[in-house]
Image 1 (cartoon, rainbow, N blue to C red):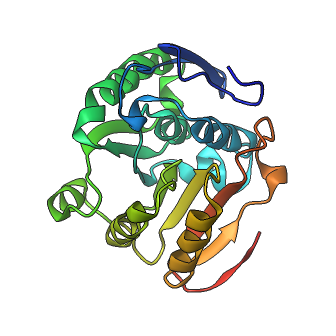
Image 2: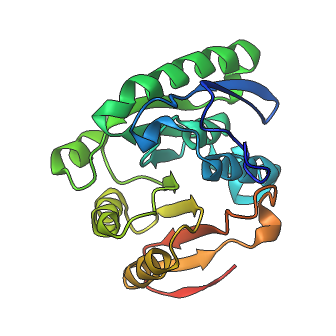
Image 3: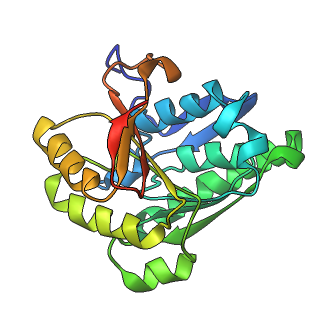
Length: 230
């Protein structure tokens, strides 16, 4: 494993300790699908939740019962993190990824509810192909939170992702995206598109783990068309 990486994509199992729970995630290094790997951005995101859950907007008191949808959930790390804080979560991905995603959800729900069932919200798995109106309607928008990690990496997916987020969100929705900047061009084009539709704020690095310095951006996005920093 590279020295600055948090997870090796060549292993079949990845343990994760978060919010007092010992979780275990399966991944498939032999798969050609990107969604079957636990990417570092999801680990940084869930540690961001852990670091900021004692008080404020990410505390269980504020999040309990909030409806959350994760796009491109892959192995389900980020969605399970939100459910640990009391949210009712739908984790979504393409059809090919769903068996692995379902397995990770089931095994970790069992671990969590044996230890502390009262604080856990709920989580279920659904297929969602970006831009598919029937998939979007089936999950029942709007949501309080829309989350995604490492879903921003190629230019041709930016517009389908944006349109899907618009369809899933309402005026009070918060969108949170965490990702490693692999292409400066794609990152800049994404921000241009987002700022035409949303209030985009980059979360200060002091608020999330710096264990992996390649994860440069966690964006918090609202529907109002403004921009700034937080």
